[in-house]
Length: 308
Image 1 (cartoon, rainbow, N blue to C red):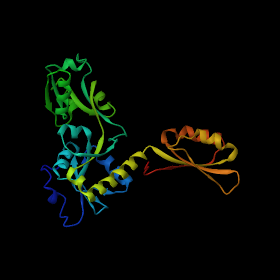
Image 2: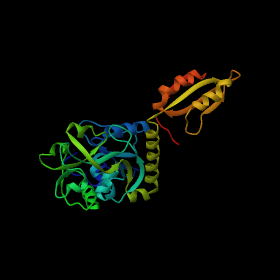
Image 3: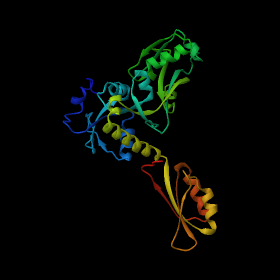
């Protein structure tokens, strides 16, 4: 991020005049690429020039800025930004009073929540949170860690870490609290997960004054709808196939679907077209089963958005 904090709203977003503009914060750092990809699938394209923190978008009603997720909720609460995307963990850490518009469960590597975990060296004799009494802990999530320790009646020295937290244990601290998706980075640094203190996922949030503004609220809700649709479609595919009437019941029973497949008669008498949406993970097993059950002309196609 730039060394200086964002300028006041009117200056940070650029001169808007009387035009209607939504000031949108996009997370810089580890979530940046996944977020820009999600927006593209939802229908909003942003390009980011090297060393620039002001993405160029194809919607003239949106002015965006890249902000660290750790800081996002503060600027949304203050009204510097109308809306933004950040982790639930950082909203809690900052104690921000914002409107949560939508839960968007995605992260840098996969579509699942992330975990903040207590980790200690593999050889450490620390086996539970109680063993952290009087120890030194490094983390970016200082307040969340302190709350967790207090809940368990543990007093420890919790210090803020500016990053590369894994390398600080055991030479500088006794334990760390760090965020993980798979645990692979912790294992690579010979650390053992002790406990999970909180799970988190991305949330789309809005400033409460912006949420009360009819135009901004409608714009935010439309964004949320399309982002949710793009996210819902990420692990789904569409499937089309033709099947003879005599095999129709057998084929339909094989098909998982949101509300049941769409079935339409074909021009050829006694034949039907069947269309459905399924989890991509089951395709490799399902298509051979459908073929064996009598399905023909099977087509699998990707989805950009899925609006329930």
